[in-house]
Length: 508
Image (cartoon, rainbow, N blue to C red; front, top):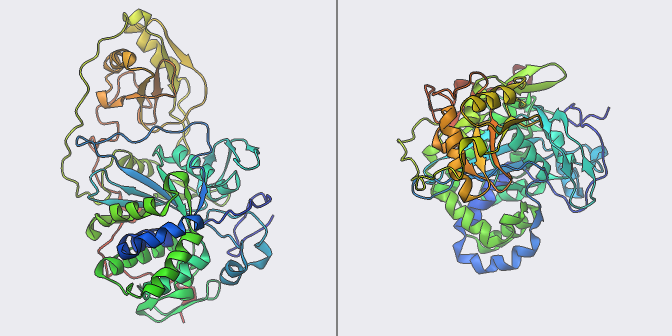
């Protein structure tokens, strides 16, 4: 079995897709902020549109509906930031090492979800460890037409199942969070951008030397730039317990520090340097088609600038080790963390009470209950926990007792975090509301969906027992604290005192 330069299983080796460059997360945010601060050179960016690589957003069959707007009509935004161990060019081989891996398809070794609140008052970033055991859904490669059947594997291998669109589909399966965009960047982009901002301040609690990543720093604060910045972001063995978990925290520190640098006004005034940076950024970036022009990136960058640094929170999915070299989501804490994002609640616990969206006018059922067809599906199973057997049958029988004689259980496997009642046409909204009322579901669980042909109830992971929906379910807070659990290892964007804990085996 082939291993990567860090000694981890690379999974099945497939032929690389042409022109696919998967990109490191940290330069993604940096490039957006740089584009947003460079308004004076905006028209030059039209020339750069041709540099951008584009790919399909989602390659799976079961795509989630977009997030609902808030009371003011504003919609949250979820961007998946991907990184890889790609050595697809001579420059990336020289920077990343492992020349023997040059021709293998890359793995998505860094994955972060960037959630921007609907009102743009806060931003949450959640990392998922690359060795997370995940259900990778069926995906079709848009270039070759190859079909990759559903499987269970480390989440980083999802990139080899047709491209970044399959990683997006895997994230939706794992988290229940709809993904609006993805962005990626390579080794070379990291170096050029770190140089452009004049370096990024970092901190270690002891002298550290990691020969695998080549990082060498003295105790205390240092400013890393160029290849040294890349060494920091690739270091795994030298931090914490030597696992990918420590590396994720180091990346969070770097990203926060970089944002503080940019917001404080870093050295980005040299027109020649800015042009070089813009060229490097757009050549390095691969984005979904919805972000496929520099103007869209510019607008997005301006949108992100509105978030105060103190309301940016970096976190890691709560996890635990599992057999087979995997980590798995920590029961309870992981889904609590994802639920906060699904419901647009800040991880820092500092959200003000939100107004509920205005409901459409009341709708009456289109027919008597006994004549309304209702499809009931069991979505209680996920990567977080096994499904509850027979759940669709139990609830369809309950609906029958409530008068819905045409409620039937559909045994098609499904995975969904939150319970929903979907309807296909506006005339069916009253039917869906009647189903929700019969089961104690809130009106917020009733959603329009073009993906259903009749009223469809999907019983989510938030309703695993009983025949009446629990009052404290639904991810709207309930009795749970509306902030990231301690196991998410959250780090605020304005924390400039944080230092990485050095692995004792790598102290010099």
